[in-house]
Image (cartoon, rainbow, N blue to C red; front, side, top):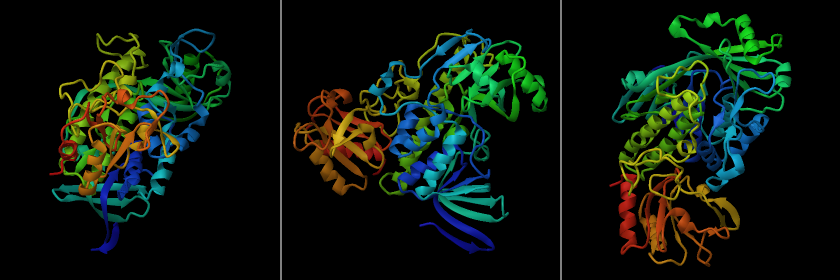
Length: 552
């Protein structure tokens, strides 16, 4: 239970988890912890959520997580304005029909529905963060904006931090079991811990300019793009719609490495640059704001130091092309949340928290490399890729990166440790370490996805009426183990709790045979599977649970 008291003239606050940073990753951490009943406190130095339209691409895996967390419908409502925007256009000018579509549809033909109950969603950070904030507070999160962490000390038994209200100047001492640092790419927490970074470093720099223009909608016409790369060598940049009517964002190349200052981006310069890039000399342009941003490729050398964890940009920086950065950060938060909940809940050992780094850091390394390659393929304005990176090169798919990545090592049993983190193709057939397969089922008459089953417990799936005794073994273990374990029998018989839709074969979908079983973690990743029956199901399951939860 949280408690506050007066202590030596300063307020004292106790919380199991302290989250530092209240942007997308910090707020997502709050939502995921709140869903799992973990009390926590979030501090964010800014007075409110983001006001700048950026970070708009939410990939299918992120939307699956928000679906299970109950946030997906609200996000779609917030994203309604850009729901009809698809594809990426590359053109020297918006006048006429010049240029080419790098791709027209995110999901051409609707093939993604075979793999997921969710889809990609275009929701800018300034629209998404208020949705997450509302849900986080509704779930009981203690969220303190305009509050800055001044210092922290991490010991073997917990973290003591001093935070300051930027409105009142009042200081509070916070005692937490764990600290999650979602405090951005120049993370003070990471710096204090002395955690280094690997990777090439800075890739390129842009200035993001927000502006109004009513005539631009006429020039764009029916081309409802996500982003348009304008390639006039004298005025290149990236144009993004905010409402398809009068509000827009333009990313202009910025070269501080050549001595160019941010102050040089005056209103007059920005207006002239946008007009030349679009190809309309007298276009109405009203500059409403500007903000610098830096594309980089860096990954922290460790995601954990004792009771402190890095998540999001504090752990990794990526080129924005492909929208990998924020998505990877949100998925960091989800991976960490269930593990913190398990350890704080007493059903997993501290060793489970070691798997956060083992699982998420290799994903960031592979994903950041793919993001940089994507920028080269799209010839992102301001990016001069190194020789051999292939600007304008072949367009490679990203679904295997966004959805098909896997954990060869971590809280998994039966994986191949040397296997690649990102496979060449999209393989979601129930292999341990991969995201569990999606298939539609009936549960008490309600149509659900298998993915809807995974959030607050370990889940065992086995075939109804099949040999092996998996269900009975799981029921016995669930009564004796601290770990929440739920068992479902899948089939059409009277004992089946889950009924596949007609023509669907759950065993084939999950890579098992008659009498097999699959154990899925709370984050929807396959922890272990047995292709068929074994001699002693209960002993086998007990061994697997011990290995996954690190509880001796």
